[in-house]
Length: 295
Image 1 (cartoon, helix red, strand yellow):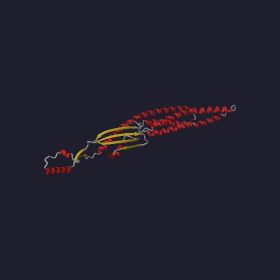
Image 2: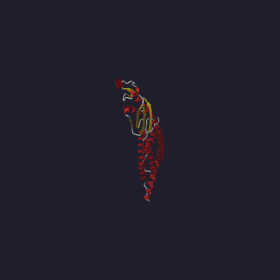
Image 3: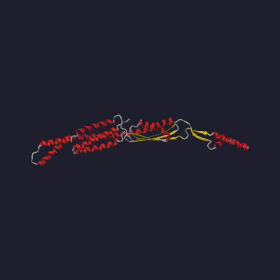
Image 4: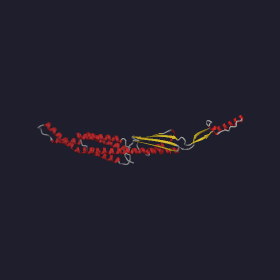
């Protein structure tokens, strides 16, 4: 199964077996944890836990709503039941009428069948609870297969989008890394120019310029942040093609990336790097929205 799986999907299944017509709809949406809700008719309520366990075998994260419909097939398992005491009472009454009034017309079956409540249809006495449970689980598995296929298909699109955005983050990271060494040098040049303008003909203390530039360079150094950000990129890529469902860990990594990017923006003191930071934050926000739907 693909590692990147969406938490959004739908599946349904219908089957007739054991005298029942079953229909199941299964829907899933994103959720921080695994939440399974099964809605059952009265006759199927004893199987709620069993059906939840069936869902857990296929779904690791997300909210799953399962809607179950159970209908007893009209002609299955019915039999005709004769009320024999009532029949005997009617026959005896008919014979008494024949004898008293010297009637010769015979008692017909058609006449007896018209007697109210003499013959009624009843459900056959069968122990079909186990059959119903197994058929419900089989029907649910069919619906879950459709749901999982839909989640996998959407997950494939999510994976492509996340990898493209990760590549853009890496490109912006390289631009910041290439620009960072120039920041202190540019600051030193600007500082010298301002001081020369202010001092005019007075001599410039070069040692003070160097000291001030060194303090600025230390304060605006972003090497550690860039290193950690590059490490997060590697981990993100590994999680996308790793083993277990990575949704929550990807979400955590995006939070850490955002932290490093914010720090870079606050420390760099450079307009060009600030532009790269804004672009990275925009990409991270789009990645965060996508990861919210990853199992």
